[in-house]
Image 1: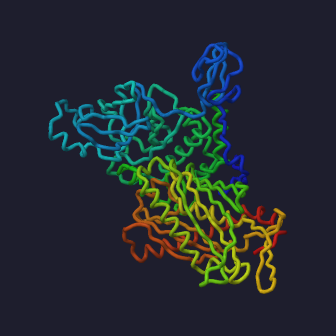
Image 2: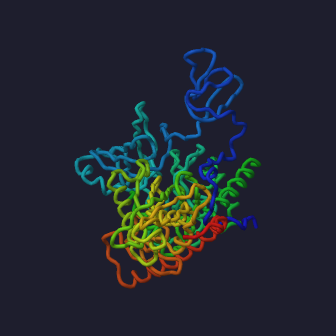
Image 3: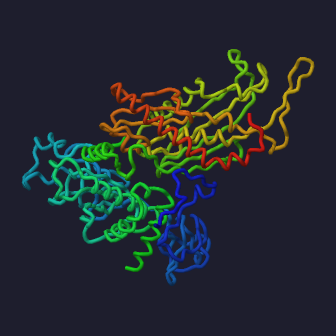
Length: 291
Length: 288
């Protein structure tokens, strides 16, 4: 049994470890820690997060708070803070409808502002292709109402951050199956975003970091109860993904499956304890390095 | 309250009814809590609590010596103030929601000050002349993981259990009372006995037919109704607060109260276990 005896429910910690950020396992060879305005010790070609100093052209000044990363002569600063999703055309994202306005839905995808899903970009049921008229505009709530979860593709991203989405394919659209949505920070881009995992759980990994976990497509809404084993697997996948994300391990189908297998040694509800999370993330990291 | 789709709500409620929630917990299981006590050196007692990934509460206790009220000449006083940080949550779009959370906190915490669970006589120094007034400041740093009031009450109890007041002696001189506060910073009295019976508030939510303890924000959004149940370590209920406008049947109400009592007793035990070593380090100190 890998389970540690002392992973209690209540943890009393000293002050410095309360605020300690865990550094994760996937970072190697970090340089010194700098904050904006610090002069980075050795000069070089300026990369992300640096700019030439005003006083001395040779020296570089950091513009971000983070670690210095040197690759040959290229000097970058890798910030600890993961920025919000910026959007890229063609990305598959999971979003939640926040508002309905004239001929479009405003969808929250975790970007700096709400993305737009125009009425014309929505797939009508039955695959109809026609111009959207006044009646369609009134009946918008029938398709998507506030709070609905949907999967969509990013159509275009403007320079000012305006993102527009479309759901012009049968695989996109509102997700009707019961499930839950979790938000992570490190998503590895893969060829496909829909994964039907061998344990019977279906996962949609959005490029914006939102992940939907639920039963597979073969589940029908008439079958109103998800059986206990499937529910337990969904909880297990959810806790494993959150454990990986806490330690900076990239989320993609292989890492999810590996962590699901390794989490079999623990009970599902133990997986939310900090000590168990750390152990699971460490084991997953080691196994992924071997693959 | 956050936005949720119908399918997510259906999933949460079905999960609660089958005793297997989103994260695998049962209806009566709590999330792990990280606690840090005595971190603020300028306060007599402090505790910081983190629940889930983003409910963060800081409780600071600063004592003061005041004249007791005429109506309670042999009792001390406790004043509780709550403050919410401006970036406590991105879900609460308007200030009024934060204010509502704070009002509820104020009401619940002040409510059991007037109960038998808290013996304010222990805070009296000299009847009608001097008494301790504990100024409790609660700062809500983040509240995105739900269970705010429960977390705050645990943090408050932890701060009180580890609070040390400076020793004071009263000298009577020709009918006048004088107070001497000791200069030695290590000469203090512990409030561990005073706080031993302090209640912890458990919030019990009704999700479908199930009664659930320690809900996160999603579960709180789709709950039908909820009760705030302050429970003492012996399992006595100090007062009950219903936070919304939905109806509850009598059977539900009684069942939720008993769930709250069980959960409350468990929380008290867990808190005592981890603070035991901390309190026993101070066992050389006299107790108020």
